[in-house]
Image (tube, rainbow, N blue to C red; front, top):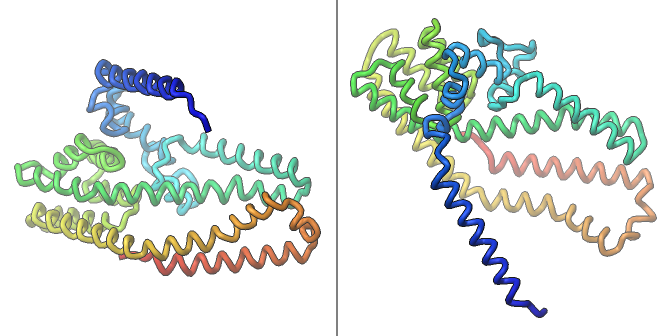
Length: 321
């Protein structure tokens, strides 16, 4: 293949122009301050110029709660999933998106297949199963990020307590200095304490909003210190060390289980990839048996058996510490 060097020259010119534009942007764009971009709560405070109570109400409503912090829906598990996923579009927009996905899946399946039963199955999957899977993925990712930031937040609280500040002021320092999700979550704790909630109740609300395994230890330590006294700084310092050691252990076990995850991925994707390759190279290979009922039964059985195997391999390489 002959390659004209002039094209390489044009590519380098384009890259140079893109780098120049990026440098100019980083040099001259200073409209957004560090305080405004550190977390969503501070960004809303700087943008809205309203009271902190209004900001608290807005953040609650974005997370699917009422203005007083109660659940909107009667389904507790669904409310917790929506709350812990960190979704900020609000309950109304979420319902609209679910309806659009359900209708789109129904219409698309009808146009492609033409059977009402398959279209109803597609509507249920697109409007119910798929959003739940996405919310669970978002919750797991957010909890993982919160867990990685949580020891640093505890260290900030410990340093603030040793400097002589009370617990609410130390929590407010975390809200002002750390990024999301820790920054906004501790900011909500600060605002709830400011507008009448007790410290223990605000900390338990924090656990309900996040749902990580490390938070109950922190909430219990703060609650016991508030009722009986004690050196909270030393307790939280030890807790931060324990959480970091658990985090390191999780990473170590994840690296040791990488071979099992790779094997599961290869074994699961190989039949599907081979099916696609055969259909691409020989389109009529399955034409004589594709519409047979026995073929559909065999494919459903193979899919179910593969699902059982994937579940077993998932349980072998994923466990809590």
